[in-house]
Each structure stands twice: as structure tokens, then as C-alpha cells.
Image (cartoon, rainbow, N blue to C red; front, side):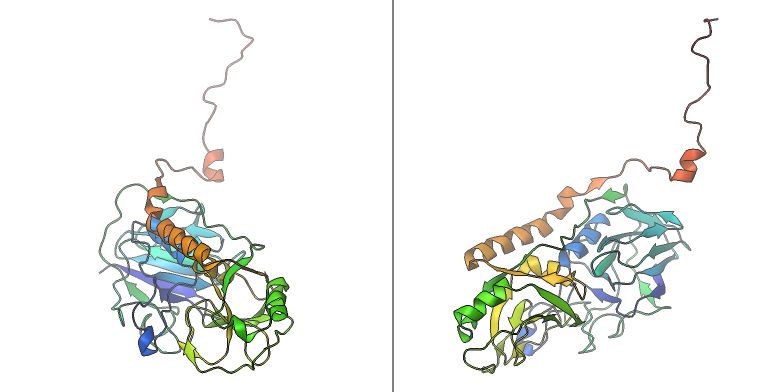
Length: 340
């Protein structure tokens, strides 16, 4: 069986796919990639379906070795220096390793999450229909935990076929506002409080993880207290607890909660917020629910049709040292000399 060996990785490196669907009513959140568009980009570059499981790296990269057979891989998401067998890999391209060669992913140069996809996918048994790790529940991932050095990931025996692929990298806009739909408990806040929520420039606090991003900024005043009868929570729900400072629920969120929710981040913008580091600014902009629904449909279509945008790489550009070693001019001649 083909394997990918983890030689080194950061402490929050895990297996994630498009998420665990259909289990929220049993108290199990979806989990999945924090940036599902970036995961889809990496998967498409190696010929997988956009929601296939890959390796999610948080801030730190890692070193991965191909064992037994040739393996095609791709990295997408937060920009980072990537090299294969010591050779730089251009952003937004796939690369094939021979047995014993390694892929090195450096730390994120901006943003937070990077994704490594492997052609054919991972041959790891799913739990509740998904490979996504939910660390608090101890389900999914590899043996219910994050990856660590020495782990061996079994791969599906699919030999790389065809040329390498290229795709425009996912760009991160650090200044883009995060669009929200107000509610479902916006009436628990006065008009002035809602206006303050939309006018304030918050900052991602150090208390930010896959469960929720706690923001730092002026508190929001509650109109009817900060307790409600617990009801359902989705990824993107903006809770306002007793402190008055918003918390945006992320993919590992609890499924119910008793704090009022002033707004909900729209699906396409959840990945934008996820890629903001602690200390990064966050501003919200309210849009109508009809616009949010249209944007969600366009986002889903974008991911579903991403493979059409991938282009084959017909040739390989040599690196600088190799280029300097080539005789690009051929035989030199004196243009002023008379013809023989």
C-alpha cells in the first residue's frame, strides 16, 4: 500500500474534508476544513473531488515523504514556501514525488490555514461518514487525534496520470469586510447596538480556534439580557455573551447555545474570517438574506466547477541554477565579420 509519511508537522495539523453532514441533530458539529475553497483548490490540482479529505496545516507547515510509490500532491490556502525534493514548487501547481522524496511546506506567510491534497485520496477509515477530525469529540482524523511526526497515512493506490495541473492560487484580502445577515436574535439588541456592531473595527483575539473566534473591541449592549432558551447554532453564528464582545462560531462549534446571536456570517465569507490571524482587523457589513442566498449558491457553484479552471502544465521551467548552466545563446559569432 502506498503511504505518505509525516516527518514533521505543527501541533494543529489534522485530516479535514468538506465536513460531517447530517449529524448536527445528534449534537455533532460538521467540522471540516476551515477554508473549504482552499481545500477544493488543492484537491482539484491532484484530480480529486473538491471535498475529499486532505491535511489541514495551521500556521506551521511540515515535511511529508512519499513511500513505496510515486505520489502526486498539491498545496493551497495561506501562502507558504513549498519545495519538492529540494526544488521550489510554484504556487497553485501540483507536483509528483518519487519514492523517498519529500515535500516541504514552510510556515504561512500570511493567513492561517494551508491544505495538502494527495491524488486518489487517503485510505483512512471514516467516522460518521467523514475523515474530519473533531478534537474535542475525539472522532475523525487519524485515531481521533491531530497528526504528529512519524505518522504513516495510507493512500489509495492510484498512480499519477497526465501532466501536472495549475490553478490560480486562492487570494486573501486582509481588508475585505465580513458580510453577515442580521439575526436570528437581532431584536435582543437595540438599533444603536446593531449600528455599533456594524460600525466597529474589531480585532481577532488570541482566543481563536476551530470552535470559535472571540473578537476584541467595544462591548455590545444587550436589550433583553444575555440569556435565551438554548437553540441551534450554525457555523458563522455571532454570539454575544455577557461580556458584550462577539464570538463567531466556526466549524467545530457546539450545536446549541444560550447566548443571543446578533448576526450570522454568510457561507462564502466564513473562510475569509478563518484566515485572519490574532490581531487582524474584522469589520462586518449587513446584507439582505436574498443576497446571501445568491452568494451561497454562487460559492457552491464555484467549488463544484473548479476543475474546469485547472490547466495542464505542458512543460517544466528550469530553476535559476539550471538555467544558468544552459547554453542559451548557442555558438557566438561576429556580426561585423564578412560572410564566408
